[in-house]
Length: 194
Image 1 (cartoon, rainbow, N blue to C red):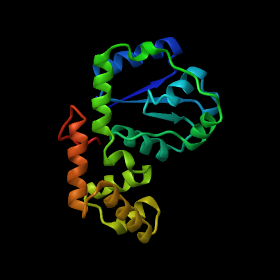
Image 2: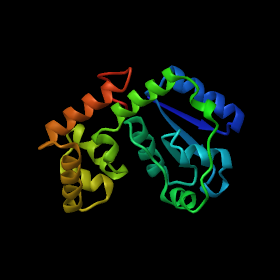
Image 3: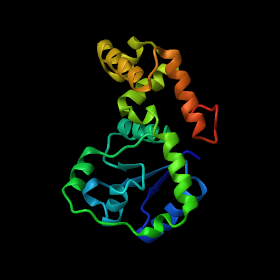
């Protein structure tokens, strides 16, 4: 299990569910699916502020963006819409209940999982992850550009940025690093996520 998405789960139930996931699968990403950013409960906002969850997916996102965000979360990245982060930065900070991470073993497991996931993949944007996904399938820049409705030059810029962020020199190294990074943080090592 690499990703757990919660939708329509009340605060107390969500608290318990998050604790169970973190105790049993500390390396799994956790996302919250919400109706819209402006409809988020205060408890969920506090979870986001404390980065207890790895992403928030509003249902009013375009489907391709929503799926790219899920893909990003499955690969160990984070997805927090800029509108959400802007709203949270304008509010006074509040503290989460300390019982969310109540044992040292859960803390240690979470810290180790975060170290594994805070690699070069986490630095990639959603668009870069889409392009990396196609690179790993052996797709040429021209075809990537056509599929994503971009110019070939824009794809080349994204590819250069991917190489720089992943500290690789070519497509083969990028694909190798991608598969090694995702298999280390997954029970499905060696399997492609699609």
